[in-house]
Structure formats: C-alpha cells, structure tokens
Image 1 (cartoon, rainbow, N blue to C red):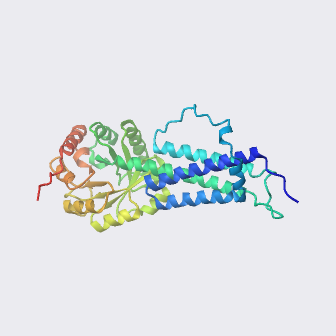
Image 2 (cartoon, one colour):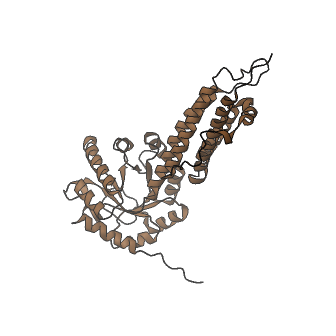
Length: 368
C-alpha cells in the first residue's frame, strides 16, 4: 500500500518557504561573521540553518521537483525593493522574513497529506524543529540588532567625554552644567555620583538622558548597571573594584556599552579579554577630582594603544594645556571633570578643549 502523492501546490509552498528560511538565515549568519566578527553567533546561525534543512527530511527532492518559479503569481519583478536604512534594519527585515517562513513551514508540515514516516514511507517534515527554529530566530534577531546598535555607539566614543559630578559644579545644578558642556561640543556624558541617594540619582540620570537625546550624545552611568538600565542609558562605566564586565552584561540590554578603567597594561589587556567595549586609561596626570587614583601616564596610554584597537578614553588631570599630548599618545576621547564642570563657563571650556583636540596632528614620519 502506498500513500497518496502530496499535492503539488503544497510542495511549492513548502519549497518556497524553506528557501526563504535558508536565505534569511544566511544573511544573518554573514552579518555575524563579516560585520560583527562573532564566531560564536555565526556558528549558531550556521547550525540553525543546517537544522532547518534536516527538518525537511526526505521530502526535499519532491520539493525541488515541484518548483515552478516562472509560474509563481507572487513573483513580480516590477515591484520596488524596500530600501535598507541600516545594518540593523537589514537584520530585522531578514529575521522577520525567516520567522514568517518558519511559521508557514510549521503549519503546512502539519497537513495530513504529508507522509507520516510509517510503513516505509518518507519521514514527515519535523514540525517541532520548525517551531524551535522560529523561537531561536527571535532570540538571534534581538542579539544581532543589539550588537549592531552597540557597535554604532562604540563608534561615537570620540572627542570630549565629560563626567558630571554634582560635587564638582561649584553649586550649580548638574543639568545646567551638562547642557552647557553639550552646547560646547561634548559627545559623551557620564553621571558620576558617589554621594546622593539612588532616588536623587535617578532624577538626575533621567534629566541627563533627555539632554543627551536632544544633542545626539551618549549617556554613561558610573558603576550602576541597574540605574543605567532604568534610564535607558547608552552604557555603564566600571572601575577595577566594581561589577565584573560579565555580570554587568547579564543586567544590561545587549545594546549597552561597557567601559572599564585601567591604570596598567595588564589591566587594559584583561579588560579587553573580559569584553569591555572601551578602556579608560588613567590617571594620565595628577588630579584632585577623584580619590585613590593610580598613576598611568602617557607612556601607559601609548602602550595600551599599541595593544588594542578598542576605543581609548584618557582620564585624569587633562586640561587645555596638556590635551594635545594626550591625543598624540593615542586617545580617541578625553574624559574630564573639573576642566569643564568647575569652569566659570563650561560651554566655553568644552569648546576650547575641543579646539585643542581638533588642532592635534599626528607627527609626520621622517625618512630613515
């Protein structure tokens, strides 16, 4: 006794959606592989693509035989292709396409016309695998988009990085000082509050979030992943005795960046190994803005620059007079507290610092 043949239209629907799934997964895999250089995520997507193919079972030759691409009423080359605004948009579009195709495969594979796998008939398509794959793609989409958004934030870690410390504003409201710093050209603000209660810090962080949104700047929270998550900050900064990077990653959304302080080459190397998105090297010069600082100096900054391609933020005692030397040593950004927050006019102070930074030129190589 033999089974009735599977209707060709059903096979065509299965074939089309199996192809859509593989194509979408390949796009996601190549983003992980070539854009993010993430071997783990790329491997997981490749394994998922193979699982989907395996779930098609022995029906795949029949699917290929039923293909009638030229007769597909949905294939309209005259329709305009949707533009992709960004890599995150590309990932979301292909993830949605893959999820929808997997849902079609899951539903069609339940039809009674498909072989049951009994009495020597071909194995039925694996409905459970299609469902599991769909939920895996939901997770992969979130991880990929988060990584891409984090990558965009990391690329913005340049220029002037101002730490907003309420004890360093000469009694002025921190939001007033922060707004002036942003108007002067600061591209990153960090809330550093070692004194006040969490409720007051929350109000300040929410105000800084709004200001940073208005000026297109990044907001970083010092040593408090929970507060960073609460105000949708762009990231958190950790000291050597603060949360481990791995713990902060578990608390924060995947698109949040994490910076780590380092005073030595070994600490910088460990921060990179642990997955820090940027490294703050300091103290470059002596400073009174923070207790218990450890000297790093320009030479350490130079050596860390040679060791890593991650963004470097130089911090500690940086002023208008010495910022050019800091940039020449390899900093991507300079972090300051008193040089801006304690200045008579934070906007002017920020602008003057940036002028010096932009005026920096790499030394021209001399012929041997």
